[in-house]
Image 1 (cartoon, rainbow, N blue to C red):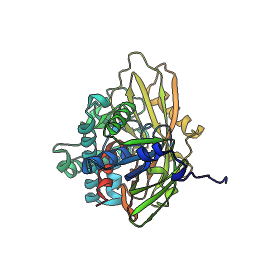
Image 2 (image 1 turned 180 degrees about the vertical axis):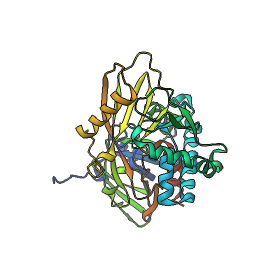
Image 3 (image 1 turned 30 degrees about the vertical axis):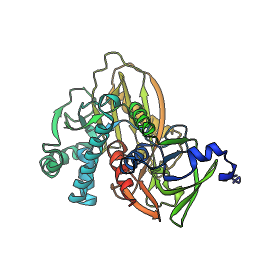
Image 4 (image 1 turned 45 degrees about the horizontal axis):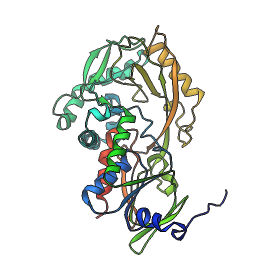
Length: 380
């Protein structure tokens, strides 16, 4: 490994040090939804403090600009799976946090500026998954009862296959509460709001080391060293590089078509217990998932794609979602999520005056604003 040369604060010009890197009260690592939401929450609590955000990418590096843009709370099969593993009360708590996170995002940025649409969510069950479909139908009333305190109405209902997907059961299990956003618009709006609050974002600046002592945190980046009163880590799937071991990276591979004439599909769709997901956007179909085909291999921070998963996405698109429809693929990409044994985000003190808010489990759009606020609250 090549040695990294660090510049000390003395190597900075007087102007650079005075106006950007001196007297930093709060430093945030990561300019995704959680990091920027944390910075905004810190500004609300501390209107006169100096707050900076360090981001190693030229844009947010993990999943915040790469996700599918679902404001979802969990499909019914995901909810039932989580109940089996974590119990009803834990599931109720995490769904409540997802709901509150979406409301905070919408109230903070506004619906129109982020392209929010409440088109509903639908879980589609392949014919091969009939047993799972019947289990979900059997438990529909019980799950609606469990989640009643969150939504104040039924969370799920059956709906006919009106979008004519092929090889699926005759009904979806749908949710009236799920919506979708334009991910790029949302992040642009969030960045604008942060910068308008006199919070500077240092893009292309990677935190390489930190240490806490004497009531402050010493930070080393690829360009300079500086100090802050407190440090907030919001790097999600990349958090192991900071010795945060209770979170693992999980790559999510995605494709999107070119515009399709007379596209009639509208909504946020889940399939195979949430391992696949698709939606309409700009007369296109965005489709992602397939991580369950190679769980260990997809536990990576590499942004490339694999033929195994991309071929599976292509087949699903051709045979199930758009059978008989002419289309072309426009773009393929990957995002890096942060996952763990449970679905609850990991919020904790790492060292004195150093805190983390990570492990969003693929629910960053729903949870990000809430976790950012909770992360800011860890420092008293």
